[in-house]
Image 1 (cartoon, rainbow, N blue to C red):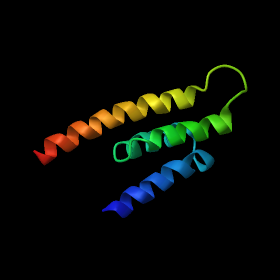
Image 2: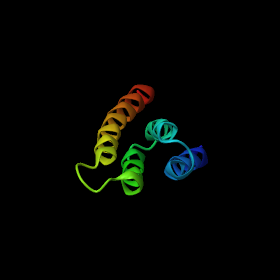
Image 3: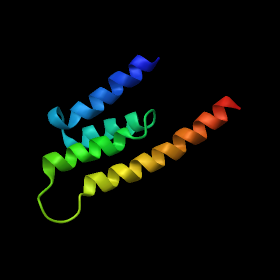
Length: 83
């Protein structure tokens, strides 16, 4: 069912524009379970929208950490289900 994954990824990318930030992060975390790099993309979108101009890009850093965690969880689950 790849079309469900595509719809979920598109909703996660568009979510920072329309819904509150905490729900968009929750949706991105759920989508990262299927496609791990989506967390980085959503983190970049959040930094483009809310970056104050000084300091670190926190949402991008959180996106990279979330993508790393999602990658290892995705890989672990895929290995356990396939074998």
